[in-house]
Length: 70
Image (cartoon, rainbow, N blue to C red; front, side, top):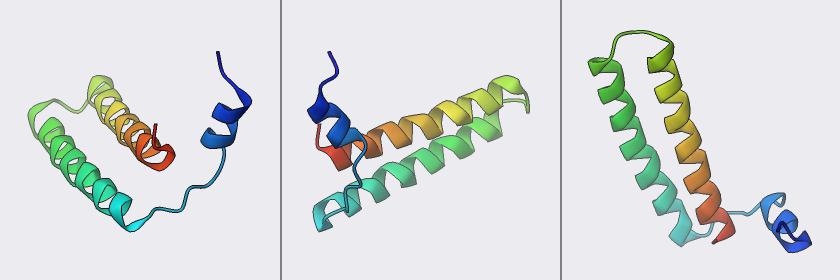
């Protein structure tokens, strides 16, 4: 069940602290490498676009986990 506390956490800006900044960078760095591998090894297509979109979603969700510390 989604609580008021969940909503407060999810819809509040969380300024990154020094420890979190490095985590964001690591995730983006490796996601970028995977994106390049996907592009180099799959034909340009709707599936390729979907794979990149889902990778972006994955990064955003991971970033949210770091920001919200959940």
